Image 1 (cartoon, rainbow, N blue to C red):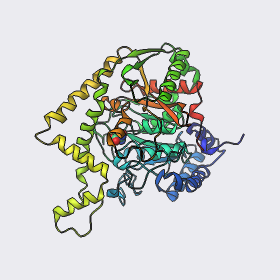
Image 2: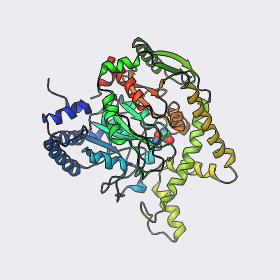
Image 3: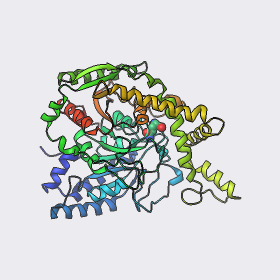
Length: 492
Ligand code: GLN
């Protein structure tokens, strides 16, 4: 059977490249053609770098010929448009940075380029990664390839849509409160948020620095392992990066048999607070079925409690905007980024550059953040939120005294319609109710497909592990994908 390149996994693509059955240039050209055909409807990419990608592909072919290739050499990648890419426009989906060409490379991109990956372009996202639906982008919303009237999730919605629609082999996302996992769930792909500090944040445009973390968005768990391998590791340029060796994620996954063996006796906790009102019947059923599958594979599912779950959204919407208001203070119209026309004086330039350069959601966050940090309210809001953050982390710690992994829905419902939650920010914020806690606690978590609803929209489940236990997450997810085929379905 001829290989369908649009559905190919990273693992399969690497084998084709290494056996020279296809060249990196051919593979790259295939995706560039597909992007040209499908991106006008989906809007998954803000910038396509055909010339840069083909150049990268030629270099990759030379390495493949010379025998110096890595498993990532020649693999076409979509990059969320908040990783600084030297010489390639990086907009953060904002008017503020619509013309910004970074003078330096982010660490993740440097590592992946050194491994030989081919960057197809920069994918669409919510402005400054603030959103759950990819509707706040200055460059327009992204459509979900499963139903183009619906959102792909956010903020890494362009990366998710690109993977689901076969407009790349794999993609990079970032996750501050769910932005890798929630769009992965909405588009039927696999997304991993690593432990805070596992992947360097250097050169990632900051949203909330104590929560931001980059990770892989792929078609399979095994692919996520390969891509994470290329991304992870200590970086002296990021003081929060963890100085510990990176496990050999990919090698640990090689045998499906071993993955299954590892599931036997594994204790999986089901947080009771996550099966609340607002979780759709289809999501509930899919999760029940996933629990049954894990049980059949020999795992033991048992209830656990995370009592502070209710406070996560409020805590996050104090801490994240507080950090954002500080991080976004640098956009003042002076050094770089958008500058208003004909300012009358300096103050007018600051004020108008910021009010014209930022969209409504970003301004809402800056105002919220400035408010909670202001001297009269700091103790009541920011300090209290920090204390609750600790209680939330303590809940997880206690749960991990009883179980090895947690299993939850990734999002309460499947993809909603474009425009459906626009008018009500709180409704929008609730889409991340199951993912935000994980960022507050700094833990690694994986979202993977576990079913479909009656509208043929994908459903995602989330596995959460102790800090630095990405290997266990990947093994459990890989084991699940050995016995299920949800991840193999495709919208196009
Ligand atoms: N949806 C959440 C927010 O708007 C999380 C975004 C993210 O993870 N970048 O803040």
